Image (cartoon, rainbow, N blue to C red):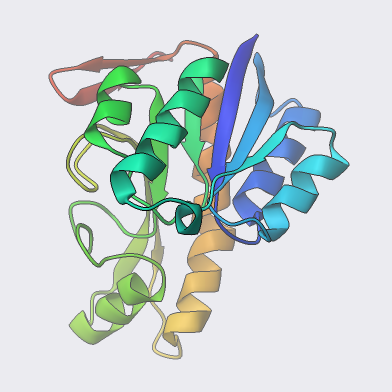
Length: 208
């Protein structure tokens, strides 16, 4: 059974998807043993507590520098030593030290089809605004491993949907979450827990 640590910052919708998927056995051989939040009042913490999952709040505001914050995050992760770390709406970029220590053990979900609409500044509604401004006809989401560069880690899964003329950034964000993100996130986590994902030369190979 693989131990999963989930990093959150907000409402915990992705966390809830993971919890429910484990209950429904759509994620097998995995359990969430810890939820770490970057905000003390994140609703995701309440979701975790209701499920009797251990929680820690590590707020950046409590540290004098980003280096101190990242070091505390590293200590907490190293102490738990999870088999997999899932960034589920986590707002901060992890330090190079953390990423290297947990190489190919950290996954993130990005609300676009990488390499489009990704990198610095491309998060949340910013992504969906950029998609609509560009006028692309297809968008989606990507689950990828995290490396030292933003949104450049090995891609695990992608799924697309058509952009509608009636979409606003808010509507598109909701559709991408519900129709794409939640589906491929739980699928990717399940594949990893079953040891079906292998990384070679920055590319993933999935066992069928």
